[in-house]
Length: 433
Image (cartoon, rainbow, N blue to C red; front, side, top):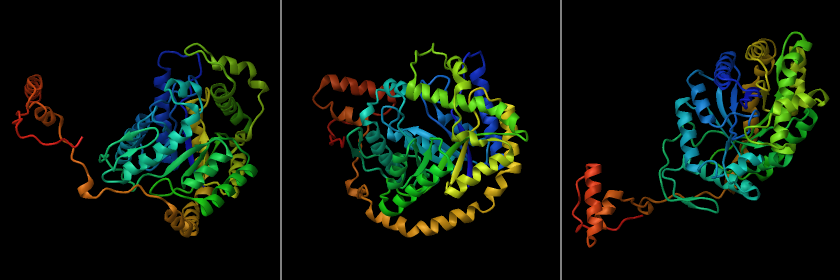
């Protein structure tokens, strides 16, 4: 298996001056350490307005900073919110490609839509249409990265004319694509579209095997790729706190992991939230001792307990496990110590044959991938004589000034401001747009 570290940038109340600064700087140090230790991925969410649970609203900035402090670790958006209310598809394509360039080709492009009303309502994303918005935006964003030029699109939720979206990513036709999955049905959707499944549900290994079997069966039989390349992979999350003494591992990491689940439930399932006033940590402390443990707590314990936990996921066919190590008030030094211990005493067993396993898997899937692309309906590229000319604004102003004194005056002012010579309005041509 491969391994990742996963960040929400949680910051429980009460907040003090400098807390957010320390939070982000500690996370950068942790990613740098993970890179040195040989951890495969660093995943960073995009959330908006979800106080205490996630202060990560600009993951592209954090990941860009990580790219300059690391050499090998893959930098994963886990995820970009794709409905156009959050992010225009062209802006996403530009940011993903730029991050791929500055990281020398290390981007993983996770996508999603959110189910938190604070986000959806804040950006006026209609709940009943968010899945369709995600699908339309993801497909066109991938076309933008892969096509030269992008021929333009008029869909249900956004439209734009022909443009060449630059820069292009290092990883061609585009970086590996993922989708956030919180249930089994989204896992099946990921398989049908040929993209990786980032599963944020805490499931036990027996249930994980059912999810994995569903995914790869559907991938083989039904896949029609949404992009120009496929990414058949499943990543599952688990809690994380490793120490030679299991009691100490739980003391250090269990409350933070429980808060992760409680705060998620607050924002997504059962909570009432008054922006800037609700104290989630205070509410959590009142109920934490009565909270049951879930399957993800298996990642909290001694190296041998962690090894046993991960063997079950490996046996189920999971491709990657991502660790929720930054939760609640988990301490930076404890996180670093746990990562170091994990890398020394647990990880080598799972990394030894990973390249061979992946190569074998892709060889077995190759004929199914070929059939999947044969079923895909591609966005038609434009022939050279079909690509429209876009006439510069200043030239259009001067052309429109032929019989309009007011427009002529506007053209003269534009020429003075832009330092561009005024063309003869008599030489009139037709603007393409």
